[in-house]
Every structure is written in structure tokens, then in C-alpha cells.
Image (tube, rainbow, N blue to C red; front, side, top):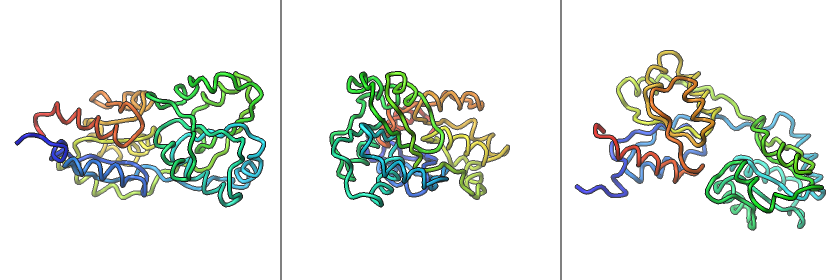
Length: 266
């Protein structure tokens, strides 16, 4: 039987580690291709530790020239906080984001004309946009989770901008019962793992324990960045991590399909 879109992942069990409530689209794409999505959230998205500081920043949005959203989570959390304080964004405020997922999320809030890179989806690609080459004197707010990379803010500051961070969520390690997952893994019931952040990868590594790591280390893994791939190598994965070309569900599934096409035993 010739392979079709509906059978391209037939017999392939994919561990999906996206946060609860955010795995549905990826799981549906996997199953549309005949695969099985095994959802096991490895990251919790929590309210910020200090919402007062965030709300104070939102109350000063009229003084900013540019708002940057680091992720879809940042968009969703930030916009809900913003809408709790004001009905519209300042007319002069330009919007930017790192990836297409964030741009789509902004679109769901009715926000268009967003600066976003095409092709590569990371801070460096955003910084390469000509619109951000001359930002001296700009006042910029970056909506993000707690911590995170500093390259975007540091580069914008080096270009003469005044940068503030607004932390709209915290990342947490979920309290998960790993027994069902380990039982499935022991029976060969996980063919490939997908992780969408370095934090989720480290949480998975920690939570499965010494027993689970013997299977995790041998299982192919799809990640979204070379940074996360480097952590896979550091942790001791036996196969080279597969890096999706962009941070989207579609790119993750296409990467899994390309890997699946090389496997003879599934």
C-alpha cells in the first residue's frame, strides 16, 4: 500500500511534552498522519511571581515604542494581563515577535502588522530585521517568561535602546506520575520524543529517574533549537538530536515524518 499523509506516521508513538492545554494541535497533527501522540506534560506555565511589577509596566505602555513577545505563551499571558488594564494598545506601539506561532497568537487578539523574522525563528533572526537596526533612543519592553536568554535585550541596548523586561509567566516542573510512562517505555511503546524547550528536556530527564533514563537516552528526540540539541548531547543521548527547522507544530511533525521514512523496523 502506498504511503499517504494519513499513514506517514503509522505505528509511530510520539511522546509529546508540551504543557497541558497546549499539546492538542501537535497531538492532532501526529494522529492525522496515523501516529499515536502520548501526551506527558513536562512544563507548567504559572503566574508571575510579582504581578504587581508587570501591571505597573503595562500601565506605562504609552511610553514605549516597541513591545516584543518571546513566545506564544508570552503573547497569551501578556495580552490577558493587558486587557485587564486597558481596552486597546497605544497607537504608536509597534509589535514584534520571534516566531510564527507568536504571530498567529497575536493575530487571534486582532493584532496585525507584527515584525517577525521569516525563515529562522530566534532572537538573532529578529535582530537581523532592518526595522531593528536603528533603535537608538527607543523604549522597548520584552514580554517573556522568568529568566530566558539575554541576547535580544543586550543587543538592543547595545544599539542604543532602553530595554525593560516584563515577566508574564513562570516555568515550573509538573508533579507527574511517571509509572505509566515508564511501563509503556519498557514495552517499547515510545518511538520518538518531542520537546519544545530546554526546561522541558531537563524536567523530563529528572522526572523519569535513573530507570527511565536507560530508555530516554536511546530514544530519538526532536528539538526546536541547537541550544536544546547541545543539552541532549551533554546529557548523553545516544542518537543525534533532530532539530526542527522552525518552532511550529507543522515543522515538528515534518521532522518526525522525515525520520520515520528512514526507519525500517517500525
